[in-house]
Image 1 (tube, one colour):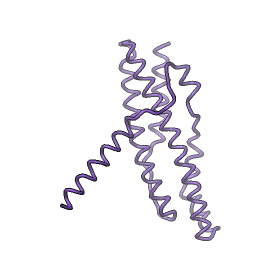
Image 2: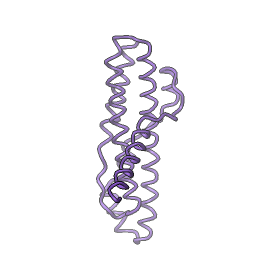
Image 3: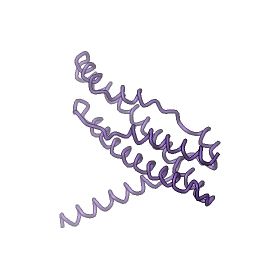
Length: 168
């Protein structure tokens, strides 16, 4: 009975995970101009500072335990909001790639496939980063390592620029 419940729980989590990766719900993108207007400008340096372990240790040494926990949770909340914006950018780029692929241009097909694959990998890393931040929110003093999503995000933006230069 217990094993059946565990299998059911894991299957449900897997479905929620896949739905989260593939869902839309982002601003509607019809062309490159829409992307330029609706994309979120993300400063990865600010994200790094928000979750920097050295900054965290310094805050912990200056603040009481309760003050530190409250302040750390606010920082984590801001980090989660930034991850949501990056996720929206990735979703919009996947949609833009899908639209470009529907045009049937063989010169763009490979670039668009790379763009979509990179966006999907980024969204997977963002999901894992969110899980880590939720654990950190529950236990503010815990040391939690985040998956490296910054390189994937930069790769995604570079793929977008490569695809747009071929399209031009």
